[in-house]
Amino acid sequence: QVQVVESGGGLVQAGGSLRLSCAASGSIIRINTMGWYRQAPGKQRELVAAMPSGGSTTYADSVKGRFTISRDNDKNTAYLQMNSLKPEDTAVYFCNADCTGLVRGKLTTRAYWGQGTQVTVSS
View 1 (tube, helix red, strand yellow):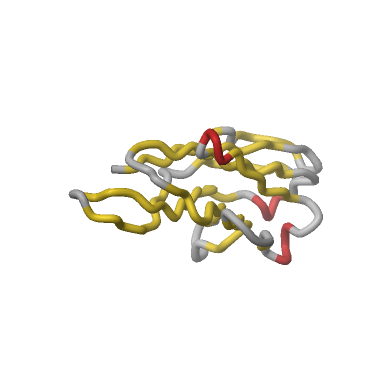
View 2 (spheres, rainbow, N blue to C red):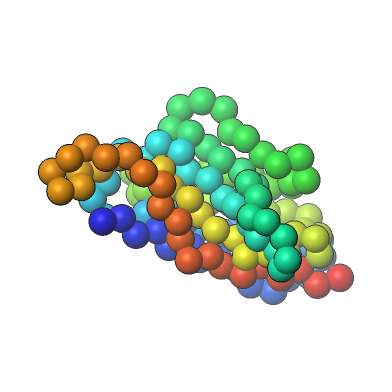
């Protein structure tokens, strides 16, 4: 089993910064893509940023130039540095880890979600 835990959310004023962390643990052989998603009240969950184990990162247009995703593969951890925050960035932020591991002795790849962390940006 794999657990994904986010941390680092909170309340910040517009223009401020926050850094989110996402740690994956458990029966993991390899983490392929790690990504950050967000869901605001009344809206669908949307991709914020994603970083594959090899290859270029992806960002939502709304966060380009303000947010940066990074990974520490030795720690199975991803980060989201959020700068110049805006009230419209207010949402619950979720981490997604696409992991390959052994499930009942079988090599399996599936995506795991964290429980989310609240980010609130006041105007």
